[in-house]
Amino acid sequence: MKTDILKLLLISHADGDESSFRKAALQLAAAESTAGHVRVAEEIRAIIAKLPPTSTRRLGPIVDIAAPRGELADILEGGHRDERLRDIVLRDDVRETLLRVISENRSRARLERFGMSPRRRLLFHGVPGCGKTLAAAVLAGEMGLPLMTVRFDALFSRFLGATAVQLRAIFAEMPRRPGVYLFDEFDSVAKARGDSQDVGEMNRVVTAFLQLVDADVSGSILVAATNHVELLDRAVFRRFDVIVPFDKPSRDQLADLLKLRLGTVGLSDEVAERLAAQAEGWSFADVARACDDAVRTMALDDRDQLLEHDMVTALKELKHRSVSAKS
Image (tube, rainbow, N blue to C red; front, top):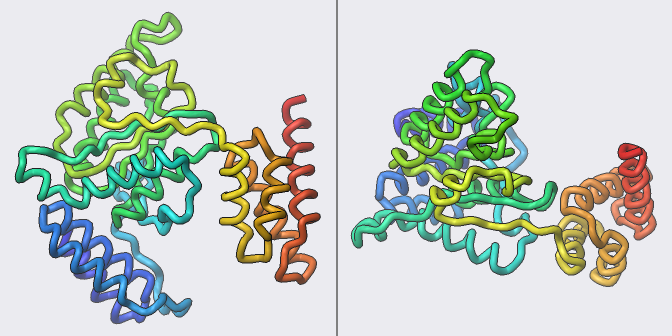
């Protein structure tokens, strides 16, 4: 793994590909951290922080060694992420929880000196569109690790026993390729056993998952995300170190999101507060979608400043589309 990173560093430097060089350097820091060389990892990150801003010049294709290959490419989608904590709006307690998890995993060797290990199994639950998947990407970005997302459409096989085999392949990859492994729509894997609507195969999948989690001693972070926590097998909860709820955003949180997404194109705090009141009860994902629509309108009108009317119109159109889809 480290040899691959060093090769990528040299190739990206030779090609003048600053973006790939920076990503490879972060991968090297993550590999050192996973190996317990925390001080070396911190020194590498400090050097990276001093590098000049990445230019848009790129002479060669970006090669991400985090991308799964072979058979795993069918069931895992992976790559390094640029998201950071500054890019997400969270409740204060959730932000503190993620900060603590990040700190623990960066200080793995320090904890192990006292017989402790970092918490690295997280269960995110809550309504759709409220930040669970983005929070997993942020964890990966802050840790300098790839985000490896399990593709459930490919994981579940029509062949008896094949799904459990593919789950084992994923867990076997976790120590070889450290990362943040995201099991989105987790209820698909860990649905309560004994459900009368499920065949015995699903019960075997749940049992296999629990056994694999118990046996996992890798340095990877496992994140499970679900919109239906009530469907999970009760035994699943004991396997997670941290259970994090993601609720629908408050009006203040929506205002923070509007400022984050549109502050650079002229949205004032006062206008953000008014728009948040109109969008109260919406998810983060819906408001972010409306922000994107408003920016498109601004760009098509050849403006570089957003008008309140752009966002009001985008909210109305999105609400209309949502109502039409339900009818």
